[in-house]
Length: 288
Image 1 (tube, helix red, strand yellow):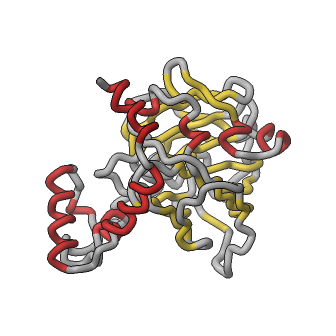
Image 2 (cartoon, one colour):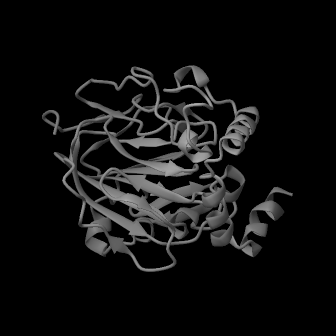
């Protein structure tokens, strides 16, 4: 049954359904949006005690609640100089070392750096034999994405693509899913080279946003570099905001081999929180 449900997505009008979800989650009629938020709370175990604001009164729409901020201090960021922290709340799907340029998606399924980054060979080679961590954000999770290390935002690329679900059963059955779905790729320039944070879109993820680009809606084709990043500072401290999902999805962190690696125990099924130490730098002289 799980295989059927995953493969049934091939028949769905995925972009049309996502466009519909975009509209519905932005309804601002008070009675309607309050009702949708309350239904959402019944379906998913959201930790309301850490939400910055009254629920549902202080939120203009379901999407406004979905992209909520947390109360001050709810996510302390590990301040150890050598700490690499989780950029999100979520569950680790896979983590480990790359096999040259090959990334593990699920048992028996892999994809390549070049396909994920939609990049030229030289850019992908920077991460060859490095480390990756794939973290799934469930509907109950906080959906803002933060910097895992200190660095300067060097580039942002939007890669149009498909919109398959990123649920565990789908990831285990659709080859190359993360390299097929749309994604927003943020490159941080660090002392150890580039660190990439890849925000993967999915079914019903109406858009993705960053403080530099604003909202980015799904497109059909054409890799887009976003050179106009506004006046906001690109120099980031560990834990600073990178962007947010408008509905849930997955984040992939890529480290070059010179940057370090993950802590023992960072493996499939482990729950992590934004700011929690998940890896250690090696060979860095200090903060970027």
